[in-house]
Length: 120
Image (cartoon, rainbow, N blue to C red; front, side):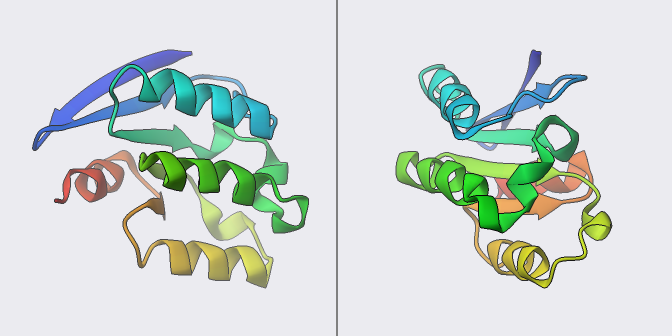
């Protein structure tokens, strides 16, 4: 796993780059959040391919638990990926509603992630 740092408009953004799944469980998500939070990152960019597919099955509760911690710590998160593969109405609605706010966003490309996280 590699952390690429982006500094935009006084916002320190961590882009997590990895070839494998780095978030398999709630604990993995919390460990990542804690490590980056204490390195003074304001925001995090993750790639959908690095998160267990169970995250996107809302019945598992993994997404809810992890994203609640991001909200509690006030660390903004953008997950970059291709969401057309998910056919569940609940995940589509969840992504739509999340993207209305600024805390958690789901986008399809890095430039859009950086743009959303750099907005004041």
